[in-house]
Image (cartoon, rainbow, N blue to C red):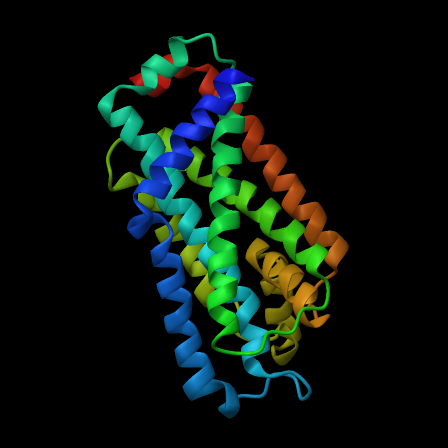
Length: 251
């Protein structure tokens, strides 16, 4: 395991060294969102009578910080290695492709743990957060960080320029987040739009972490777990297959 540990240590030391770019932005983003929703909006909106709007929206804010932080680090790191051609040194070394895939997962989860705790500590100074099941929250954030690191890696493998690494977050993830009802409960929608919203995988992820905070969900939690594991399995298999075709990545 020396090769895998060495790669992880290299990447962890890198993002700690540039903490202003890797650790600070998620904290600034969630603080700005909390200031808007907590100071100006939360007492004007009532989604559920017995739940404050800030408690309802905070799980989404936490998930968003995980999504965007994973994108910024995973995609740019892999593509920069392609751009400088040092990715070839990794592929011609005796490191297995599974270890390369694990490298991207593990160092991102380590970074996520640091980002999550920093965000959570800052949040405690701004508002009171209710936590119903810390195990569900922790499990969800680990699985979601793995899922999105695999998604961004998939994007980075196909990217041929720096503009290409923003294709999935700009044209897929952002519309799913902002236009598909993560700001309010789907129970407020008509039956037709409720059925449409259930096609959005982000809806299941937001409701899973929301359930861990306030025991409220618009979808079946068991189904949300199955969907998350299903996408992780599919993306992991695709990425492993593409990594084995490293000459295609080089070209």
